[in-house]
Amino acid sequence: MLVLDVGCGELGLRGLEPRLDVLGLDLVDRPEYPGPFLQADAAERLPFEDGAFDLVYSSSVVEHVPPARRAAFARELLRVGRGLFLQTPAWSFPLEPHALLPFAHWLPAGARRRYWRLGAQGPWEDVHLLRRGEVEALFGGPVLAERVGGLAKSWLRIAPVGSLR
Image 1 (cartoon, rainbow, N blue to C red):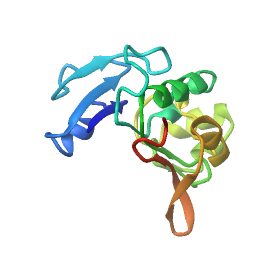
Image 2 (image 1 turned 90 degrees about the horizontal axis):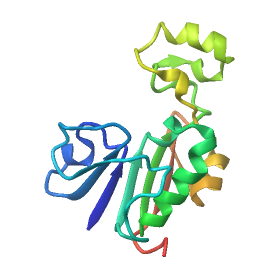
Image 3 (image 1 turned 135 degrees about the vertical axis):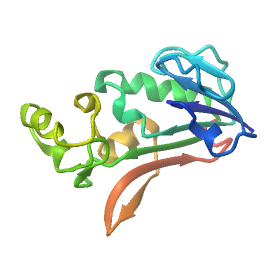
Image 4 (image 1 turned 120 degrees about the horizontal axis):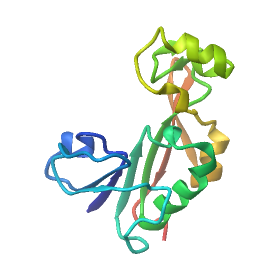
């Protein structure tokens, strides 16, 4: 099974199982990535044929894609994959998962920037969490909820291999 790990970071899926046939893809260069790697913008046309990958895997990435580029990002992931596993934090969950602060993502932009300085460090101003309907509109359905205490913590779009073609 050939997997495209979109937004792989330093280890991605290779950190979980080094024997997987995985190509890491990230917007920034990752010289430390332990395997085949491509630096590219997944919202642009990737150098692969339609359905080149058995599975496209993307965990906690789409919320970092600027809203105006999300449709192109989704189209490209769906184009190159025959199956999809997508996970993204839910806008409806009260704890913002990047800054690790309650309610941070619900505040107006100015207040959010000041509040986020109290939390985990990072460029969180560019994070835009998605609602379930947004995930459905971009990647199709069904979209599943990963729940904590009855609240949707993350959205999952899982399309088994072969279901996208």
